[in-house]
Image (cartoon, rainbow, N blue to C red; front, top):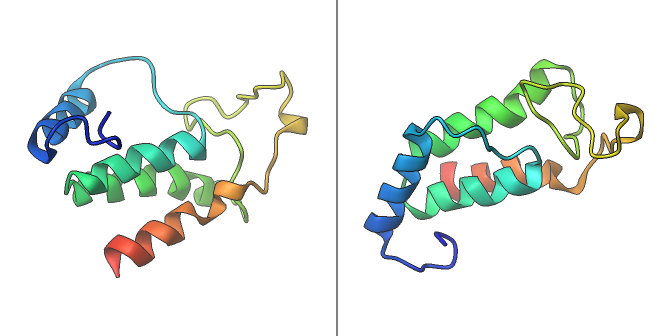
Length: 108
């Protein structure tokens, strides 16, 4: 809804803040979904939060020695796989460009 501009920027930002403050157990587990979540944060001028999530998500993969970003990644479940086996997960996925896109667009 944020990306679609359903509400004004202030209302969208308030919704995202409530989401971030909630203890909901559902969260993104793919770079694809994190990309859209972080885009929503930047769209609502929540730069500090966006950078925090970039570092926590893609940064954690780097800490785990990833040289490309993975198709699916949950920092709390390193064995997560949509295929029931991490051996067939993609470890060089198209969403690898997301952090560099955000850095170039919003942080440089």
